[in-house]
Length: 138
Image (cartoon, rainbow, N blue to C red):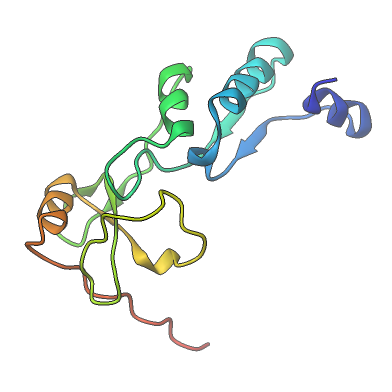
């Protein structure tokens, strides 16, 4: 039995399915979510990044882009003032990190949203991102 059908049987009607960090979905999981929409008529809303710190599509993002009925972009602004469309991973000195696993658990402060132009500049070694400030205590 489909996981959504199990949830419906246990909890009653479902208004929608929300998926965060959807870039980490597999192709098969994106297909299953499309079945939830097509067969069960339940809306599915997915939120996530398009590309990794190397500028490569995540698997989940690739298939969401290919199969989604519609997309809405949540706009973010780069430190340069331009629209941020890329993510760069930086070391403790603010220099781009271009090697390593696609997914790194923890260390969210090492990822910075930047414009494509800044991404190119930083990954060529022509600039750096100021390390994130520690949050102020409340």
